[in-house]
Length: 293
Image 1 (cartoon, one colour):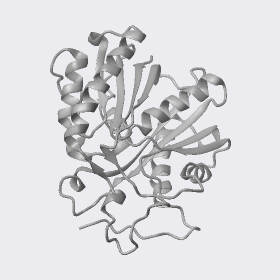
Image 2 (cartoon, one colour):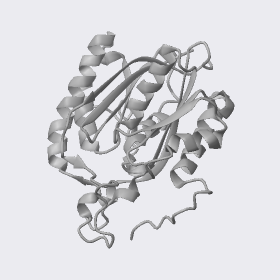
Image 3 (spheres, rainbow, N blue to C red):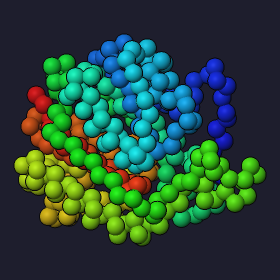
Image 4 (tube, one colour):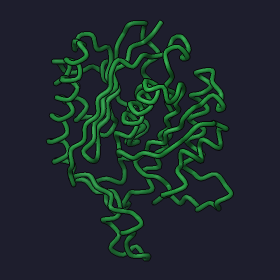
């Protein structure tokens, strides 16, 4: 059993753009914004449907947004990299409202004959609106600090591309799909991410006891448990580090955003949390946030 997503003509909105627009419309409605108020669109995802035109520009057009748009791919960390990029645009004065979308059709890059990996992924789209403080609606979130890190590794890889598409008949194409060395990833990524979080908390002056919740990348519950324990100093409860894997599976860059979306409504002003991603590259990103009044 494999997905059968029909190819669409150029005149029809692409699949990735369609689900990104739906997520964006929900985010805009929640913020009380319209497409015409967006200054920039970032489409950050693991696998783009095509090389160009950029998926972000198609989303921009569908929403009727002015300004500029572009795609970026940092695998499962694309959302946190996108949030920092959006925040940097706002800080620099290049934009006041930036839409960051994560359309993830992970099933498109899976090898469905590989029983070790094909079942762990799901398809979904998320969207985040980053605005200047003077423009943002009350009751939102302040970004306290962000930090990004990359370290090259072959342990998670997808070789598909216009230079190496594989045999047209699919023979010998398995290395052009998602492959990973799961045990090596676990062993190398957990200490890297835990150290990165702790170092950033020290830089921001945030104590582990002040961290109300961690919305970690949803790839492996064991990895999340160990990372959270190394940060908090004790085994994290479901409240401290919620899991959405059982409902949505691994949705790549969208995973930590789904966890945040589903488990943040109970925050009170002044409470702090962490959105954190990690994945192929290796890549990792932290976004420390605080609930505003």
